[in-house]
Length: 292
Length: 287
Figure 1 (tube, rainbow over the protein chains, first blue to last red):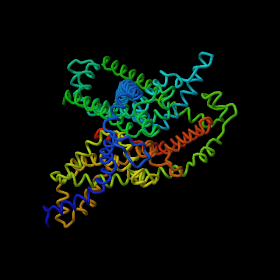
Figure 2: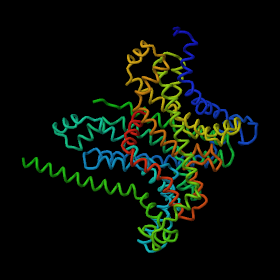
Figure 3: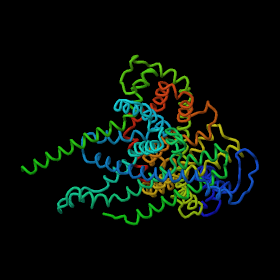
């Protein structure tokens, strides 16, 4: 059998990797490259011609104050959501690995929000904020109370709360895996050497779980930066566009206002910001990793 | 001895406190779902007057369900979601495992190296960067939107890199080359060896990929909403969004629609809970 000829290799490659390559090229690579080309045109989404405009879309994106306001809002939202998600997830993971009764039940329970799509979750919480919270607040104060979702600061708060609730269970599973990977011998050795349990946690367990932290931070940052589904169903950018996140702004710019070139340019900038933050975080995180 | 007993007692106490804290947190976690469940059996007026009561003043009612099912076209939407999720998951597994096999076993071929690095690098690209060109190419130039098959193939295309990466790791670390060599000596071709030896051994990874991708496809909103514009093709998330847009004032119906949208996956979770939690953990830690 001729195993070194080009035609043999090509046949083997196409037989096994052909379908995957075609689908991957068609949905990811080609659109990605073509998307760059679109940022240099002023396409309106309907006409056959895509007039070439050079860097105009990028200058327009730089001057689009609504876009930068959305980016800033997304940064604030991500900062709070990422910190709270990871704090809660770590706390939950610690509790459900401490050997208490029913820990598997709790693990499964905290994961439930991740089973359901952002659109449905957003509407469920919209009901909770608009009806249940309002009913409780009115019972306490005795007067009429507006929903948190109808105030400018409140909508952001709601969005952060729902995201924390949504992602905590997922990140918890990663931290649980991290806790399980730290061997009990090391913890016991630290305790015998005179560490208090909290010192053992701080000086032995947490440093060994560094890769879990890096991974959870990466996942939560990259997810928060492009949040869309919950944003759409929970607040839809209201009130007064005070909760429009970057992804929603990009969507509206392209599909609602039909500025496809500008929308795509703004999407590319969002991608670059997201990638830079994600890669920097992983780089810093990996640098200090330790082994047992 | 007394010290030991004291320590044990202290440990029991801390465990009890932790357990109570966890239980309270758990109740807070599922409270939104419980609220939907208690309100779905009330009339619109009862929900508005007191959303927190277990039973409405006008009593227990189940009439929200049939009406929401009819208006949402539930069985049609459910079938669409099921067809799309099932086909896309099966296809993703088939094409990615095959690609991973040829990549691992021929790591020196340039085509393999290029494909694999491109796939790994592409995992950081958010969907927002691809949606405009996708609509432009598939909606404008090729005009193939509004077909289930287009959505299925796009789903596969987006998940193939992650799945290939996971199968790559599994083949690399768990499948001994000697097994394959024995099959070649016994007269198997590469194609036969793959299907008879390698693919069956990948079962644990297949389960992980199936769980992660099926959940992602079932719940995805943005891509299906761009591809499927015709009402009879809607999936559950799109139908929920459309339903809310039309009937948001009829809160009883909204409750029923939301519960219907959540029920299929919650029922599945009751039975497959252990596998889902394990699969998601495996996928997250490897990815």
